[in-house]
Amino acid sequence: MKCFWALVGRNCKVFFKDKGVFLPSLISPLILLFLFIAFLGNVYRDSIRSVVAGFEISEGLVESIASGWLVSSLISVCAVTIAFTAGTVMVQDRVTGARDDFLVSPVSSGTLSLSYFVSTYIVTATMCFFALGAGFIYMVAVGWHLSFAEFVLTVADTLLLVLFGTALSSLVCGFLKSQGAVTAVEATVSAAYGFLCGAYMPLSQLTEWLKNILMFFPGTYGTGLMHLHLMGGAIDAMAEEGIPPAMIAGMKEGFDCTLQFFSSEVPVWTCYAVLAGAGAIVLGLCIVFNLKRKRKE
Image (cartoon, rainbow, N blue to C red; front, side, top):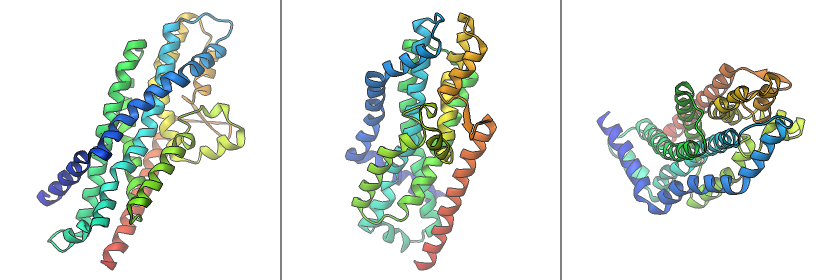
């Protein structure tokens, strides 16, 4: 265990000392949050007002709902994209030959692979909680409606999303053998994942066939959980301003707080089960491929 934690600490230090990787990973969530606020904030505010057309709703509540959507979308994306960035340490060691150096020492291949996984999880969680902290500051500034339970569930959702992102990153990066391949994968994931998990645009605004396809992606369920726990309190507060329950339910469905799978509502426990199950399956695949790689080594 001492050797294992020494490797985990070493991998984390390698990431944080590489300013060319660490600083962009640190700043990117803040830039993304700023872009959300500057360019998409008004779009979401107008969408909220259009749902409750004919009823009066305070601007503070509109801001609170919109901020919950923005922050939940940000964390949903960062939990996976940052995991791919943190996973570059494993590929760099393979490129530079450091992995081979470790393997000629009394370090097993399984211990080394597990150290990469744990260090990637720690780095990704650290960066995501930094982004979540910045998001909470923004939410407090515009209007805070989160209960303590929703706060705790948001933290739990983040940890679960990071676990899924780390497993996915470990599986993909395990096949990469060059820095160019890592850069290409990172660019692809950063460009596509936000759309595939429903973070950039509510699923209700997509065509029915595309919406049903995206419901087969585990990340969609994680994004739905984040939306529910960061927006749910503010949407429920609409009842205090005289908004009918049916309209509140429509708001939750329209902003993906409640997900529909082929016209059937998906329970919250199912979202957790799908996300956790997908993470377990991907992690199992990582173990299988590592065992095959160990035989070759």
